[in-house]
Image (cartoon, rainbow, N blue to C red):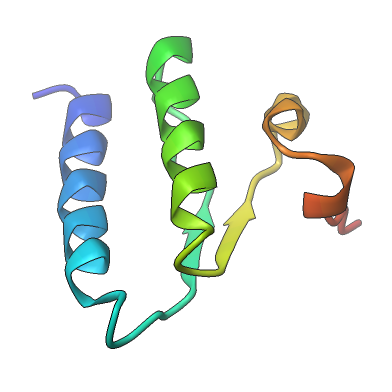
Amino acid sequence: MSQATKEQLYLALRFALIEMIAGDYPFPILIDDGFVNFDKKRLDLMMELLRYQKTNNQVIFFTCHEEASKYFSPDDRLMLY
């Protein structure tokens, strides 16, 4: 398996667990540059999943890739220097 495929499988398992326990334990989701090996199509789908997931959990996504900002509104972003 490629590194990107392993990361996608790992994230699928994590999000399945989050979905199962979110009703009882709505923990925040912390992601630190978790999608650097994703191609554009998979990155678009992951960002769509995060937009959906933020209705149930707080999502905190750290990245040093400025192009990721296009997926979030200015109100949803906080730039740290």
